[in-house]
Image 1 (spheres, rainbow, N blue to C red):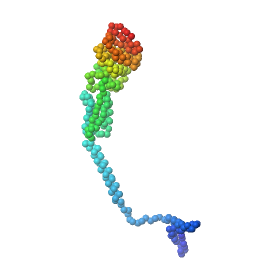
Image 2 (cartoon, rainbow, N blue to C red):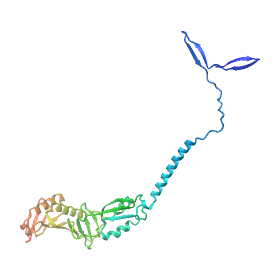
Image 3 (cartoon, helix red, strand yellow):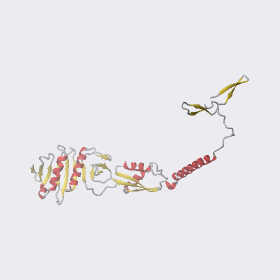
Length: 302
């Protein structure tokens, strides 16, 4: 609150006190604060602002520390001592070593970058049909090991042109770089004059059925030296030798009945094999409900 008075015909401002006493009803005395001045406050004159050197030096220390750490990280990352220089490949058969080196030629560089090399090397080898798995294992900052696990040749597949392929226990068809001397699951021989298919899952129905029969007979453990001939008509001829016997049994299988009905009958006959079965020429189980047995002399029993 400001008061004004006249002095010589002019109005002059009288500064109001800081507080005005007010007597309230009841005799209480209360001081009311004065209104703040509406004028602009003058800036204290002191010259140019002073520079805060302490805060500047503190920030400068932080910036320099980050710069030093970044430089050290970059030098370690691009240093030849921290990059892969040696890659050891194990589990590869000797005939396939040159092929593997050629497949990894795009990945093996000196020095080898570590960005996507492990996964890229594993994918490159896993695309080869005979490779079941490939695992990257780092050993030292500049050395690593790539372990290759080849597929197990479980069943041998022979084609009319003399070529051979192999089936692993899962039914994957592949070309083995180092063919084994003997397989444990048996042999499948086809008479259809066709080129061997590429590595991968079996697509031929008769080949799939022959694989399931040999696998079931092998798991039953009742025979040895089992082999199957796939005729052009799709009929399967199973030749197997029961354990503890020198003769061979022949089974004729068809597609009229499912294999789930024919395989148990084969395993049952092999489990109760005796010397009298040596006179059997073949056993026709195309109809498992009424199997036919042909003796060597031409007599047929059902």
